[in-house]
Length: 170
Image (cartoon, rainbow, N blue to C red; front, side, top):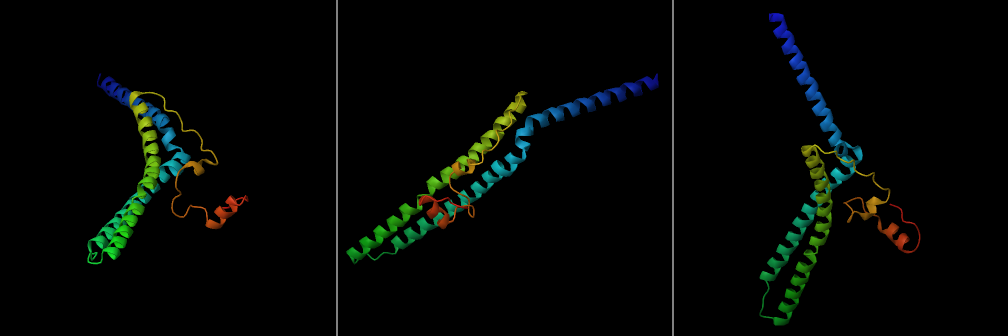
């Protein structure tokens, strides 16, 4: 009788282990899209890099704005013509620095797209639906991804050749 209790426990534990393995395999199947090397190396790594660059661009813009405002606060208004030129130059500097929002917006859209893909995959997993693998990346897809990351931009000579009708080379 005591032997039967042990066998029942062993059978129950074995079944629990089998169920746990099935659940893990099922979860892995749903997460395959996120585990794809192309997703991890291209999309996820690019999103992380874009976010880091966006933060640096915002910091640089804020520094430029603060420097311009500090300069404007030190203007001597006793010479109206000179003061007017300095105020105009400070305003120009602030306006140029505010252009960061477009670049940051483009970079953050990359981050948001990647996070949405992760969120969608995890939601499908939580609901028990089948996750769809990400479509393979097209060779020229990098051209459509907004501003280049530092060090990944075309050299000026390649841009000049491209605009002159020749082929650009990265």
